[in-house]
Image (cartoon, rainbow, N blue to C red; front, side):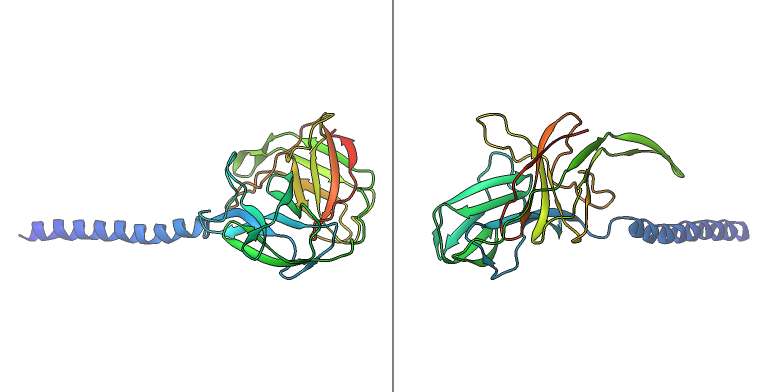
Length: 254
């Protein structure tokens, strides 16, 4: 009887140790995981009730949101666009320009004055169109665009892969009013520009260097857009939050 009691005591002790180790390991595992799932959805560059100039429009931009991505996300390839302009319950005929993946510019097809509502899936925002054009944006000054291929690097934890990326440098800071810089392949003769390449939001008035990689890193979704390879001919231009475009600057990727 005494021997049996000792055996049961040993068994209970082992089980207690195992359960204790599991209770410690579980919080560590949860702490190391990503706390919040994120995705890119369609957002608006301009603030609600902004007055858009006559030569502007509604700029839709990629916006980080929390959640798995159901609902207001980018429309799949070949599906009807999520973005539209409305006046009351009536859809306004508009011109659509895909500046880059996730970056869309809509303008009323005919001159429009007064209020309109921009829709992006289930989201909407009201704006008004002014009678006058806004201040023009200067073209990017002497842009230089470089391509850096993916490569394997050695870290303290071992070998890892660094994603390919583009680095854009300008001779002068962006003009006042510029919201983002867009890079896309130059259109072939007689063809419309493609909405490829990438867009990068301007973070400060004096910023002259911009980088883009689709890899968002750990716990971040892939950024909309594609890295442009060396030897490609591209156009670089600015866009304002109010939908104005600068002239293009042409450059070959190094």
